[in-house]
Length: 113
View 1 (cartoon, rainbow, N blue to C red):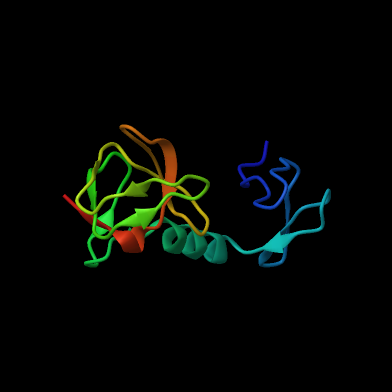
View 2: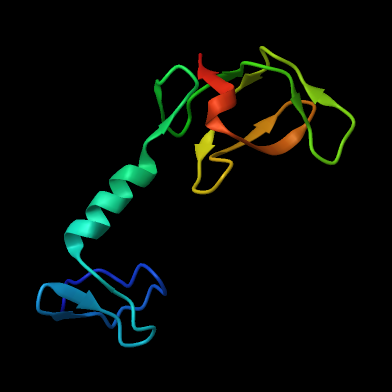
């Protein structure tokens, strides 16, 4: 039984080694273990507006008034957001805000409380 990681592109379990590369026979993706480790480390570092590293479960404050897309309401400066979740993408914080519901925020508009 092989202890190679699943393919990062299609999550296939049938990966194999070809020299110094890992290959996926299902989608044709090829990668290295060093590249995968560096990529996951970079993707997990999310910083707030002041440069503090954010983690899942942190509490943050909104640093400026933000328009809520699809609504006429505004998320006011100083709004406390509890129990954030970090996600990949343009908006890297998933959260629930009292009075607004589920939202996605950019880390550049919050600071760690």
